[in-house]
Image (cartoon, rainbow, N blue to C red):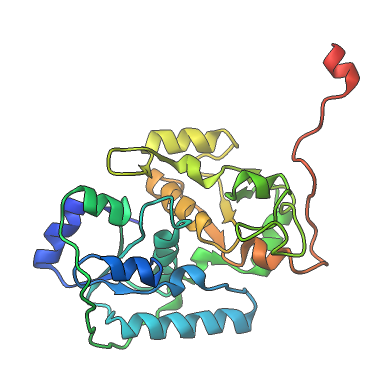
Length: 294
């Protein structure tokens, strides 16, 4: 991320008047049908797709999304602009779209900061008209594939004390009360990847008049410092399926954390392999009677 990834509604409005864009709405089809940015295509698969990091799973994901993005009209010449409802209502799905496109090597990808809510709050136009994009050949380039970590890479990170494994899930998942956002027992095991630190993904954002927005660079670095992460610390992020962690990845990259990767299979993959170690129970020790008395 050498240039700005986050666009304000004003930025995007100006670009729409002068540049070749493909706007990608990641929301559910009903929300899209009720109103969306002019010309936007709806790709909800960005959010719903459950990836595995086996060679077969990675190949299937590449093939699927190269086809979907090509059908949306992305040839490499257009800037892809991804948006969701707001930054904290879609579990980071616009950022997941950013990560997918960046992983596939797409050269120009932006995120509408604040999403549809910020666009509407700015009084900019919306429509229910559905466009008919001109299909293109998506320019697949795997030179950026190092953005994502597969299962073997995550195992290596767990074994390396110099790499911070950063869990971005909601608190009930972190304390091993629930296995996923889709229900307590959606996955066969509850817990954490061994040695993980925790910053709940919501902490990367704060309220504004136009909805939740990412915190400033200094504020994000302060959050990172609370778990020992500096701009030079290697960090591997995970959540349940890589959406919330994608939100955090964008925040950390924008704040200048230099070495950030994402375990895209996340807890959905790790927890389903009983041979992989997990930490269970509360991530802290209950006070003993003696310590309470002291």
